[in-house]
Image (cartoon, rainbow, N blue to C red):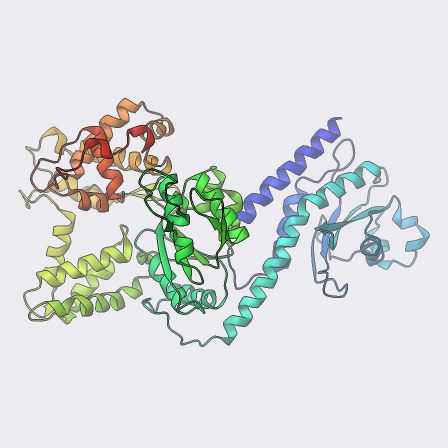
Length: 607
């Protein structure tokens, strides 16, 4: 009984490890199934133990023979305690594959059927067994193990354990073969595409962007679900539009749906539509985004923010190719190419239970990571030139160029917030501030100072109440990043007579707690009580700190600007202000519509 428990536990650990490993597989031009199988076997051999006392084997091999290649053994992956070659008994392997049944020889070295097997004689193999690897009634190969200890020969229970191990790894072996076929097909398409083909609206000549555009050009020609990952402001929607524009669906609709900040019911109606009378306010039938994008492309931005119930519905749509409007009993077929985007680490979201495992694999057919601007700084001059060309024409006289030292200052800047979007905003403001036809270094310094210091009453104060302390969340690495250089500047510029609230410690604490609360709210669909539980603080404490942070952010600015600054949907921010009792009566803030009743916003429990 103890041996059975130990073996089940070992198989469970193998399954968990392989599952986690496969979540992180990406498109790789140098993909080699041998390396992948070798990794599978490496994981397994840390756990595979036979006999009552769990004795290790001396050698193990995974041999894969794709069903459509006439029995030729395409790959071998193995491990040997002596570090020798990977010779094995092809007689045993052929017998396993031909019969589809496990094969075991207690003492192969003395068996008359192996008298002429030089490899076994050389390795002094005493006991060996082999079981087939099968998935969905297809025989993919075999797992083969050897032991050289004459005192511990393989028995019936060992064969059963190896068979259970084969069943555990079979889905992963099948996935490896499918992935190899996909990569081979992608390589063939890649070689056929013109190397100098451009993607509309996508600017960049860096090596990092070349890789992205290579994949994007290929993605445009294959009708698969495409997943774009990258930080906020990297241009994920632009890349999606570029893929659509080069695809066979280019003359059909391109529809965008932002999954963040919408409740389950609103998002369901937005995506699938509704019929008249299905809920209060549904005065007529409405087609959803899937129907609007029929024969075209649907771009689901921030897919990771979709509620779990909606993720389940999306999984079914991607599987069945049909939708049902809210309040309707009729399913409608749709032919839509789906492109998804997220700024979060989806494997981490899956492991945390916030994103469905099955949906992840359905949208992960063709993944690409869009690098942040700080990883492709050689593209900054091209982007700056483009932004000047588009914004400079509206000035009189027009602005048409930038000084080299001004451009160098932009290249040297560590772009962490909103990436390309932030660069565009800086260039457009610099164009507005330029007195002549050329952007100078002084103009760039003035532009950056204005964007970094929003204290309009006292621009010279280094301790502006609304100046943002440079804290950033690195979602990919799961860490909090503090810009120490900027923090030192804040310390140096704090006036001696600054009040307590303007001192660096309290400002940093306010900024950090505020951003942490917003991230927790984002994870919990903007609900305060679940966010408080997630953070480990009381709802009262969360409301107090959140109120202080929002008042800090709203000081001298409007709701829309504040929402953009903290990356929160405007309608969600308005509801939170109403719930927290924050009045927008101070200068520069946007006042609420006097015709809007407080009852127009749902209570906190439903927001």
